[in-house]
Length: 126
Image (cartoon, rainbow, N blue to C red; front, side):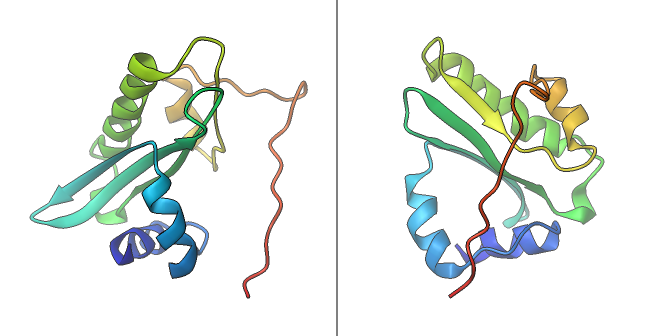
């Protein structure tokens, strides 16, 4: 859990709490981690209800290891899980930050606007 939070911070992602990670991580449907000499340097997860809705989340690579194809490898393995496991007609979604959308497009993800737009409900830290 601490490694997860640390890699998110290192990769410049939104802060998550220890409490949230303790609840959320065990509910991961499928996850990928990459370690170099025991250190977590890359990760990604799929969450959802297991039948109708799936979301690709927490794709992160340590900046010291970016540009080596690790992000592509992580998303590739997640997509193998989708192809092998997800029922036809299910929705697989993600939120793409900045140029990451070009990586996801290589795996078949398409922008949905203007038909639909991604929306977020920020929950304040307590």
